[in-house]
Amino acid sequence: MTHSPAPLTILQNLVFADDSSTARPLYLDAHSAPSTRVTGRTVAHVSAGETLSLASYFNAFAAGYWAHWTVVREVTLEVATTGRGTITVMRSDAEGAASVVDSRPISGASTSHFELSLTGFESGGWYWFDVAADEDVEITAASWQTAQAPVTAGLLSIAVTTFNKPDYCVRTLEALADNPALLAAVDKIFIIDQGDKKVADEQAFPAVAAALGEHLEIIDQANLGGSGGFSRGMVETLKREDSAFVMLLDDDVEVEPEGILRAVQFARLCASPTIVGGHMLDLNNKTVLHAFSEIVDRNRFVWGSPDPSQERHDFAEESLRDTPWLHARQDGDYNGWWMCLIPTTVLRTVGLSLPLFIKWDDSEYGLRAADAGFPTVSLPGAALWHISWLDKDDSLDWQAYFHARNRLIAALLHSPAPRGGTLLSEYRKQDLKHLLSMQYYTVTLRHQAFRDVLDGPAGLHAAMPTKLGEVRRSAAAFAETKVYPHDEAPAANEGERSYPADEKRGPRGRALLLFIGKETLRHWFTSPRQKDVDAPQVRLSKRDATWWRVPGFDSALVDTGDGTGSSWYTRDRARFRGLWRESMRLNRALEKNWDRLRDQYRAAAPEITSVDEWEKTFRR
Image 1 (cartoon, rainbow, N blue to C red):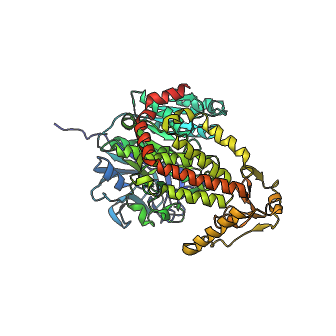
Image 2 (image 1 turned 45 degrees about the vertical axis):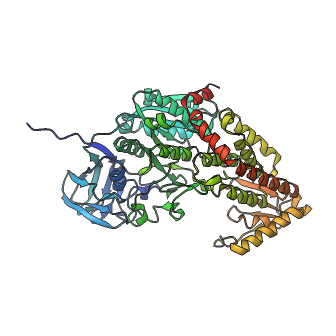
Image 3 (image 1 turned 90 degrees about the vertical axis):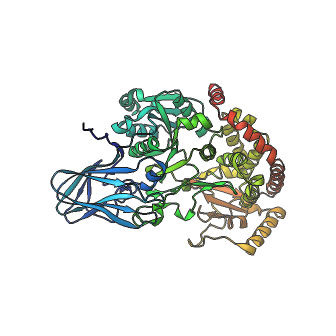
């Protein structure tokens, strides 16, 4: 008796961006076949005499991740072409050294198959293929496939949390609707609409809603931030018998639908339930990768890349083939909720998000899941484009409250260090830095965050609908929160100051101590000159307004991070003194009560992250 071979499952399709797209280096090796023309989503034309390499972020196969995390042990590469030439399959090791695996001639209309082992990829490495054209060659389709049955069957629900970004959301829905292979894996798409500019009111919404049909559900609720919106998406997914996963998507993004499909295929084949995250690419600089993986420093309790020098990698400048560190498998602690798939098994075991509104909800969840035995994988080739943090002032505006409060709560829940390690010491230094930079609103918000943490976890859910309004209203008492359009900004007494671009380092060592001491005494004991209270003393670009320059002025007009205007900071001796005293008092209180608070928050966590508790908040 003969047995037919097991049907193959597509893990990853070859995809291209339009020739006009600035994202082209993410899809094709920018150093190969310069005259290659993309003529379709899966179609590229390679001119005679040229070699096109698919050693690119979106079209190489991240074998190291599949070998380590999934049950897949062999993959089949299938390439459909027309024309005469050669297909060469390449592989790299964890150090980025490349070698030839197989090479075959092609002629006419043909489909080539390559059986490839994942042995030897445990620490990292990629597969890709190159096409050398003897005469014009057209690649019409390609995919990486497996005969391995999934470990976890089931469909994907997608939860998009939005606040007044209806245009972005409709474009995301259009991209999903235009991908039949992805829709076949989707159970439900939830749009959690928390704004007053409704997605359903967009002109293009009726057409995309008709295209998606029963896949789409709009849920209107009060603005409960990212954690409230995503928790609603988690709850709704848990109600659906066919959904084995939920993918959380931010609203102000541009998606690559193929990346979503890759994430769900990877999750289905993971050896055990695993959170699968997508990378963040810069929406304004499309070839720039924010970070390859992210961890939480358990001593300082701050998130970031394991190696900061690897942040902001630009594939237009250094391709995958040219960047050795991209070939080593990197394991992170969490993935941002701009694009993150979570198995429902994880939701049922560890609960939903903490009620944090925004900031630290994703990183805390990754730590909590890891404590329960569920790892997070940031999967190369699964990504979307999002506005970069460089274009935001969110550590200075109303979001400073949530940064401070939620970082403390996460540390209380997960820090292994006595009294949170160096966290409180770092907060004292940050308070002084902001006070010397005349950022009194930021420090006031941080102090409110400290007081709320000291009050314990009981009020977190009740504060969800109201806290944003409170912190925003408090801005009215601080002149520096007003943003002046450039044509309405007051003239500076001493004009604009600028500094050499390479002068980026502030004082260090003994010079730093002397600087801090001198400026602290000046801000404590002296009042600003009246003329610099009545008008800004100087004007500074955002780049030039560093923590070691601003304290030397009595006032400064500083450009905002997004470049839309300027904020006017003015030295206030009384506020400086009062806020510095309060900083010392609150930091001492946190230090003294750390163990008590740690026990309180850890005991409360299972309840405040439960479905029942969240549903009470939704009903409010």
